[in-house]
Length: 437
Picture (tube, rainbow, N blue to C red):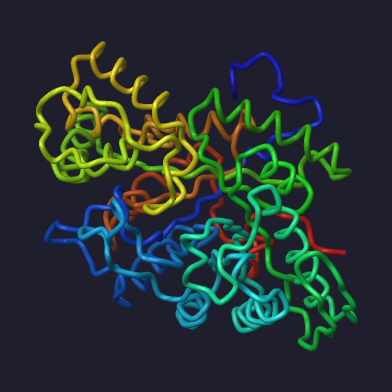
């Protein structure tokens, strides 16, 4: 049991059970796509193999990311990252046919989907999968993404969660077969839900916003939060904060589960795992990727700088970093960030390339060690109540969770913190969520 003398929050009781999900997010800087054993990120075999392996390992969910526009670099499509992502619900419907227990989580945007149509499609996935569907509720307000849609980026930043909450409430009315008469700031809806309810009642709701507004939205509406806080201290802080917000919203302290994003680098011994992660960083981040990373925050061409030299001494040309390469680049104050990076790199004696590699996994979601070491770490986190599970981004597709399933899962089971069988046929059951009234 945990050596921590006090509970994280007096109202919260740890479940003591770790749930795992696998996050297939498409082309990104954490997955290595150039190894001989790397798969094609849009090929059926990549999706089918990883989800069946996850089900063999009793994972609770298979989680798909969403991309509504090709990512760019300094105003043009990023040459090393130009592949798109298949439609989540289409792909998950196909994967439902080759799986029996694992949950199917679709990231779907509230800004660019009609709420009634989206709700009907999610409910259809829930029905055909026998109650295994979930919706990762995301919202976007930037005009760059909105240029791909008729309505454009029409949301003020402050309105993104009020808009999303209205969409969720309308979806729930559809799922419950209610007569809907809604006249609001963003929608006017007259509709009726027509489909029967699934065995789990309605799709599970995931949410990934960690701003104060995002946390309040999750506290009011979510079943599970996909957080970036995987290290012990920040996970504890996030749990305490979310429990307080959940109680303030009139919900039970146990109502919202937390599954941080995670990268696992495992081997037979700690020394082998440390060597493996050093090799992995060289595969994830090369000289070009290192300069690309810095250019997102400097906002200028840095190709004249030596990747093996110090960080650029020039100031950034942008004030606040943008969104063109994904959510991780948004809203950083460029001058403050780049000053801090230069100071950190100088203090540690890091080159551009070394610094960029050090940032990989720096948000605290990386667990490196032997199978036993990592099993002990995760058992401690879940017994303490800091997390309810992990949503794993594999560094290799499609074989990146094989060692987790074959070596880590049995050790977690030996420690009594991982299921030995699926609890039932629905996602709600396999996440340990209470049944809907």
